[in-house]
Length: 219
Image 1 (cartoon, rainbow, N blue to C red):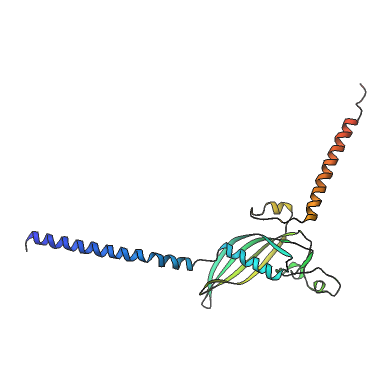
Image 2 (cartoon, rainbow, N blue to C red; image 1 turned 90 degrees about the horizontal axis):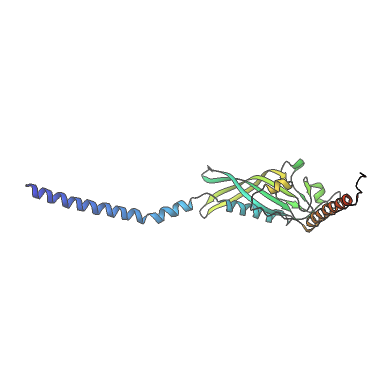
């Protein structure tokens, strides 16, 4: 077989090999949408889903006494229990109380929940007999807890929301809270703040007038 014939066979083989490569690349490109779908379907619960879980728990248990001011995901861990995929989302959240009420937190605040009931109305009322914390309208609290998710065919579902720690917030704590926090201030608190500012201004005016009215010492 001469050299020219061998060269022809080599060129034909290279062309066939190139077509095979192009065909393989085309197949890989057609699989991109499927791969993207698998990645999106297998993603972990988002921070927004965690916030919605806490909001739904508040709506269900607080009797319109508690409001969610802000939410922040702090950590997350994925695992598997008895063949079921699970995800634990750690969070911090700020809540406020709309009315005077009793927050069911267990003995000495050892078991905080999202359940809130009306304030005690008597020695044998439900609120009086239920261990918890009496809170006033306008109080702000920081919660630290965990949201449990489990995987279903339709995505992640909430298994439960638990509170591990609850801390009452003062004004400085609220100012240091995440920027998306919307601090709810009752009309009574607004009136109190305005009144305090008015008293401070009045005291300053009186002090200035007394200084001007004070006779100068004889020379």
